[in-house]
Length: 162
Image (cartoon, one colour):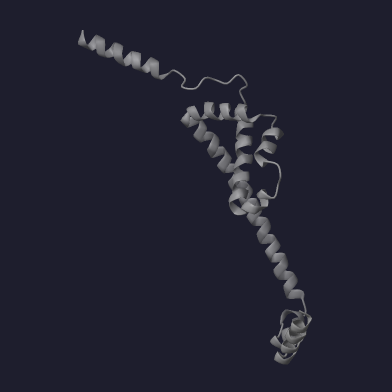
C-alpha cells in the first residue's frame, strides 16, 4: 500500500510538472523570426555599449524600429519572449544560434579590417620618403611665433577699449 501511494504521488508530481508555466500567446512569433529579432536587438545593445552617444542623437527609439521591421508590437514581443524563456533549454538554444551568427559576422568584420590595414600599409610604403618623415622643423614652420611683447601689446589695447 505504501508503494502504491508513493508511485501515485510521483506520478501526480510528474504530471503536474508538465504543465506549461506560461500559456502560448495568441500571436505566436515563429522561432526563426524570434531569433532574428533577438539578433538585431543584441547588435543594438552592442552598439549602445560601444558608442552610447551615437544612439542618443537619434530621436526615435531604435528598438521600436526593429520591432516595426519585423511587424511586431512591443507587447507581442514581450509575451513571446516570456513564453520562449519559460522553456530554458529551447531559449538557450535560441541564444546559442544568435551567438553563432554574431561570431560569424565578427570574423567577417575582422577579416575586412585586416584587409584595410594591409591596403593602408601598402599605400604608406608607396608614398615618397619625404612625406613619411615629418621633421620637427616642419611642424615649427607651420606654427607662428608669438612674442611676449605682442601679447602684452594686445592686452593693453584690450584694456583701453574697455
